[in-house]
Amino acid sequence: MAASPRGSSPVPPDARPRLTVLSGPSGVGKSTVVAHMRKVHPEVWLSVSATTRKPRPGERHGVHYFFVDDEEFDKLVANGELLEWAEFAGNRYGTPRRAVLDRLEAGEPVLLEIDLQGARLVRESMPEALLVFLAPPSWDELVRRLTGRGTEAPEVIERRLAAAKIELAAEAEFDTTLVNTSVEDVARELLALMKVA
Ligand SMILES: Nc1nc2c(ncn2[C@@H]2O[C@H](COP(=O)(O)OP(=O)(O)O)[C@@H](O)[C@H]2O)c(=O)[nH]1
Ligand SMILES: Nc1ncnc2c1ncn2[C@@H]1O[C@H](COP(=O)(O)OP(=O)(O)O)[C@@H](O)[C@H]1O
Image 1 (tube, rainbow, N blue to C red):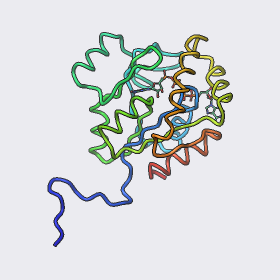
Image 2 (tube, rainbow, N blue to C red):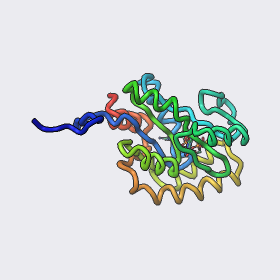
Image 3 (spheres, rainbow, N blue to C red):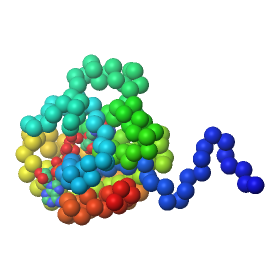
Image 4 (cartoon, rainbow, N blue to C red):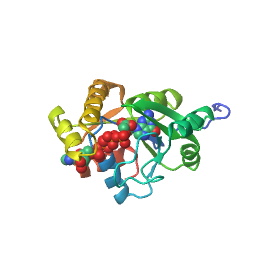
């Protein structure tokens, strides 16, 4: 009889990637794709991050982010409450650990929308995670989308575009790339990768 490793069950090759990470430069369309995907499949659970960034018009505490001040963020870090965190374009962002682990323990598909540094940290701590890179159809289109969104001041856009150059150069670190030409197509492809639909 073949021995199975103690304390761990064998993972079938077609097992669902239980944790999926979606990353890509600011303005590529991550939030738009995720919102569309959840409209079609509300059972896909998206982690709500904590951030020190100020809310944009229409963003709600506990829905888009947990908006916290520096002191509160420090506490989350000190208490080990974040699965990962990173500084991005002058603000800090982190994934609350407990909620993610609870969903994973319940066997539910979990999606994180986080930056490159966060994706690298997740790869280290949870190597079974599927890392998906969302790429723009072109650099010019990325600039158009980020500028056209109209939510950031010009100097903030500059910082985000500088970060975008670094992120685009790291595409090969991801398991797969989706090019955001059509929101509907990308949402469908992402659901297929997550084996939800
Ligand atoms: N590492 C990490 N990055 C995050 C987290 N939450 C959001 N981000 C990333 O932080 C970056 C900035 O997010 P945001 O200010 O909402 O701008 P947007 O991407 O242009 O909509 C994006 O790359 C997000 O994916 C998190 O919990 N951890
Ligand atoms: N496939 C697409 N085609 C055209 N515009 C898009 C597409 N996806 C997103 N957008 C637009 O690009 C802008 C940035 O999208 P957003 O979802 O806020 O990006 P991110 O979350 O990656 O920063 C928004 O104005 C959004 O409506």
